[in-house]
Amino acid sequence: MRKVWLIGVLAAALVATFVISSTVGDPPGVHIRLKLYDGGKPADYLLQRGDVSVVALVYGIDPPSRNESRVVFFNGTARGGSIYIPAAKLREWARRWAEWRRGDVKDFRTALFITVAVVNKTSHKPIYLVIDNIDISPADVEMVNIYTIHMERGVRNAVKVEKTQKPPPLIPTGTVAAYVATPEPTLEYISEVLIYRVATEDLAKLYPSTYFKTADGKLYMKIPAVVAYNKYTYSGTIAISFRAVRTDVQFGIYPTFGFGDNLAEKLKSNILPSVTIWKGSVFSWGDRAVYSASLVLGPERRGWIWLWGRVVSEGYQVYYCAAIMGCEYLGDKITNYVSEVRTYYLGSSKYIDGGFEYSYPSEIMSRFFDGNTLALVGTTSGALVDTFLSPGETAEFADIFKTFDTCGADFEVGLPVGAILSDAACGAITRGAASTACRVLLSGFDVSLSASGPSIYIDGWVTNHGDHPDVSNDYNVREYVYIATSKFKYSSGLCQYEVPAGLYIETH
Image (cartoon, rainbow, N blue to C red; front, side, top):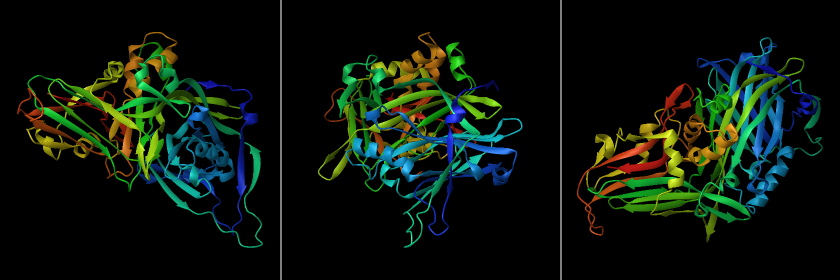
């Protein structure tokens, strides 16, 4: 690892130690508690050792009205593996989100991003390093939000994130109001140095104007959820339905993280680096809203289904910093996420804003196959166990998701955010120099649109209608279904799995 010195940061970094009256319980805000494991066995004893430090960075993102700016809520030592961010520190940030969404934040979720390093003070090397996210509604910052993050040695993502929520404690009459913050200089912190950042506004010159619309003064882009191609002349008619219609669950989009050594420098040199990629533990955007769309494709026809959203890709060099010894380089991290999806009301029902069309997003797809490849689908249950659909057969999305997500990571509809952002991101990383390796890597960073819960799936299906009475020149023939998958396996704990990318479906 390389060591650097960052001047002037230490003096500005402050951590608050909170003295809490025992009569009032946990105060409102965000509580993060770390649980350590080594080979599956509890290792919390490390949190109490004098030669071990726990250092954490926690930040949120502002609403689109502030261009998704980073808002740091905590950066310093997490003594005993505990972090407390008081409601007062979150309140103004929550107000900005509520203002942006015109008060519609009850079911809305946004991300708090986390970098946690458990460091050996002697060697200055991390024993544990986790990069992940938790989610919170701006409506809940006055609640007591407790997140338990389970960390396994050698695993970059949280093994599990548990959340409990309770109302703020009642303070008995005559009790002194409770939580006194005593600032003290922190001797250790996480420094993340920006490598690049690209967002929706940076894409306007790269794609046709029909891919964008302005709403509430900000730019939104069509994000493909399904791209389908019934490729050959001698083919049946294929129908594809996409349905996120359950009102008893939330739908949301998870971020995707990547981490490795000197990623940016290697990409500048057109070297494909070794990188660990994983889905975030919870949503970067979530809401209780519904959406459905369908495509009916005769032979040689194409179509796509899309959502209006805002996309971000950013890269940082990550350092662990301490007084006297300076800063120790830990690695480069890349984060792709969707910060916002546009929604609207019809009566009392909320809908995700999107659409479909019988065309092909060629400007996106030309980048898409840099980092993704086609795979024949053979499911473990349902109509595709024999890898083809006979006329009249239907394959359920849930069976397809489970076939690829062999780790139970809840990766469902892959959104090709990496492909959308790869040209702009690679231009920023390489300063305009051509890098095939960069496009291959970043276009494989797909994010997941999912229903909340590991056993609940976005509904949808692919049907082979064969010779449909309303479609000319189609035939009663079996159809083989191909799904695009990322060229990179994703990690979930110690398990690795393939990712269905953008639900690109091709029938042969």
